Image 1 (tube, rainbow, N blue to C red):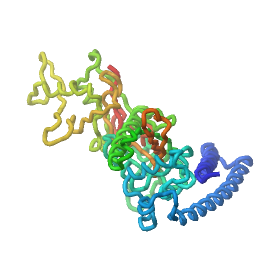
Image 2: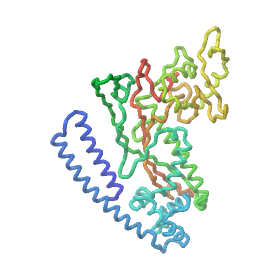
Image 3: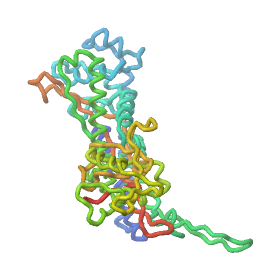
Image 4: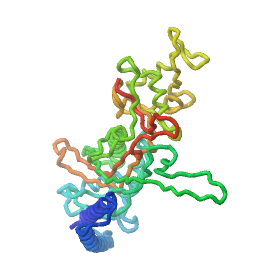
Length: 444
């Protein structure tokens, strides 16, 4: 049994054990006789699996110790690049991907570059392309992920937590706060003005469980035989193709994901507030009242992080706010009727890359719905979205997928998940209109 399977089995057992205790805790009781027996059995299985993992890791270390041995099937230049002197590292991502392509080619069976096996803690057990591929060298892995997150306007703003070894997800306490009324903040913390020598009154917070398991995102890239002959060109192309595709899928999931085998998007989470359209509002329009009411539902402490995410179809509607004539009172006068004034600043003004609305950036994204549909304009504090991921990612190649086109297929596997931190909208300390870090506008 491979170490990958052992670790997954261990994670499944830990999850099962936690489920037993969660049920008992929810019912405010101890474990039944059957539950206690199952918990004891799980403990015994975990002990055995841990011992198997230790043995497997010990054997991997033995293999690593001879990984630099000279292979008669590997050319001299390759040995010079991959020997002990270079600490078994590839000089470039393109060089590593060319080695992956050779390892997956039947003509090169038995001559896989030893640096592929040395590239990660589980590389040995997953060194066959059909069985998961090779781990991307850590420094290249970090650069690829950095490119992905830095190039994404949504992904770069979420709260991201890395998951450590021997773990398949995260299970943590979140504050169960749905109201800012006295006695409800932080789920139940309450303070008092207390006179000298008077009795202090106790209070305690209330928590909810935030549980996420890693999902798998798989990307495919196709490289021509000509491109494979130039490691520099291959590296440049792979970085661009990988970053563009993965950032698209990750950001679309953060916004629109359904939570089934993929992240839960904030538009489908329980905390998103949908602001109603105005009475008699014309279809496929955005009016000043929409913007003001959306802004009023964003918590004050989240406004400094908030951004407007819009479909590009929405932008002409926003420019209409700037065309209208302003008067001293901050309203425009149309036919003798005062209309609320919304401040819109076009991109480039004051050196800003993006337009601003109510002082916050307006970012066009492909994942927003078309004009007139809920989700065409969203006000979001993305720091209130929790994302988890785990590296290093895996890579594999195949010459068969696009054989007749003289192309090699590279596959990248990245484990990721996410969900909104807020489970529900918040009732403010004073007032009845709920607030949330995620605000959308009703279909018009």
